[in-house]
Image (cartoon, rainbow, N blue to C red; front, side, top):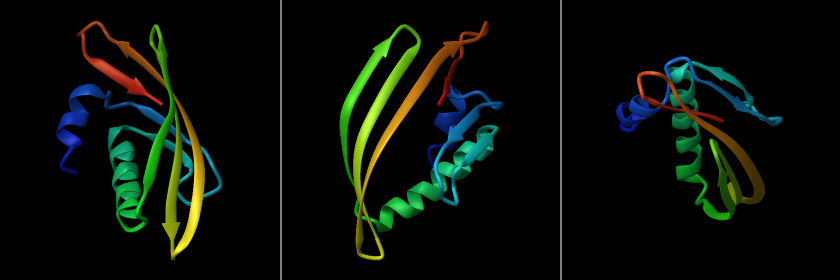
Length: 102
């Protein structure tokens, strides 16, 4: 959790993150600790899968950011190609802190 300190500076404690799909990590994560645990689990997977990530589209408009990626990984030496799209909503509260929701 080395990046948790920095994440706590920009993400609300009550963040709700939606990770869709049909895999063991797919679910709605509530709270910053849930998001950090998800990131840690994905990091552990990615370090063994030799990932290759290419951003296909990154665009923004107002408070929205769209990110689309093509990811090539390996699971037990089986290549996996994935297309991922994320819609980020960026907003600030009265205390001028920045919060990210995906």
